[in-house]
Length: 210
Image (cartoon, rainbow, N blue to C red; front, side, top):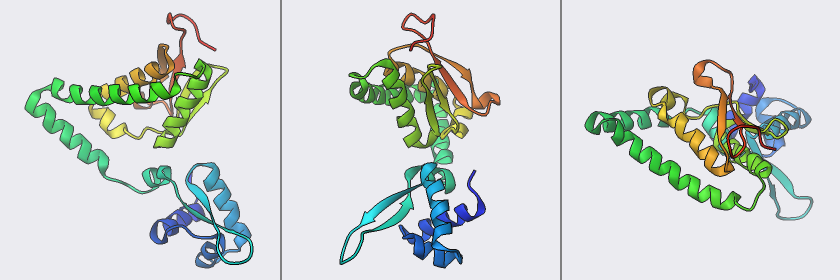
């Protein structure tokens, strides 16, 4: 969870763009060392990213800016309501199939693109890669390689998925396509769990894969 000071840092970066730690420290009335500790935490959590600025004499300086994950998690986008409204209009006009067709087409296109990139990897490496893809998309995902599981601590499409459960089914199919194996959902945020967890099965669907 983002603390009060960290939330203020994110707000400053949103309003003023990438900044160096001394600039943030002055705005917050803190020491540079104190701000750097908060920036390290935010960087570790994937909410800020640093860039090296070179120019003039002396050592290069670092600036910090928001990541896409921070934009999605910390600042409301309003896209969910728009997407849901559009899907409901489609359903009202053409029935459930009018919603499912474009959603499935999107999943198929994404799966084909991503599967080609992951094809040379072992299944364990694919699991890590899928987690990285979902984490970059804001799902706060990580791979539990020893347990052959994918864990997502945030759902970017929760509002839409509550109204259109096919989104969860298509997410599971996308994961299966990329891993080349069946997966079993053992925890589901929409069912009240605090995470979504997918357990990877063998190609035959009987045992966990390594």
